Image 1 (spheres, rainbow, N blue to C red):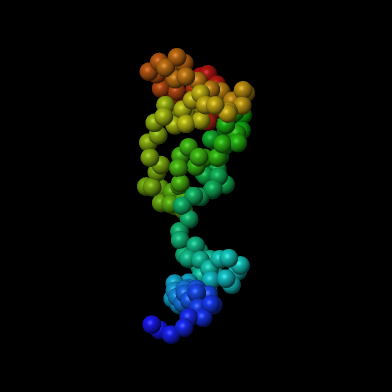
Image 2: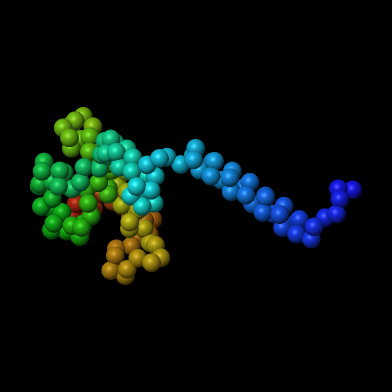
Length: 153
């Protein structure tokens, strides 16, 4: 029909398909990957400027303790000395920057405390674990415990 076929025509067809696929890949890569990609390794250099432009969400414990040093001193005496403020109170950069109307949301002590203190597999034996119903029934944790210096009131 088309003349005599060469015994390597099937290889040429596969190479042609491979070449077209590679050309399509290069074409897509040219249009989809930003020009500044790869400047700092496997990263986009413009991502640094994008991150710098975002306002911080977390203030850090140092800013919290500038105004709330009494709580910091109280916490140093207790078992929560290594727990950072925003672990429980949430992100407070707006509040710490001077917008004092941006107070943290009202906390639900029972739910908040049980995030760390409910019985969980894998916690060290020394970590206080409780089964809330057996431990306190329907009571709220702060009825008996100070959150910044746990123990009994």
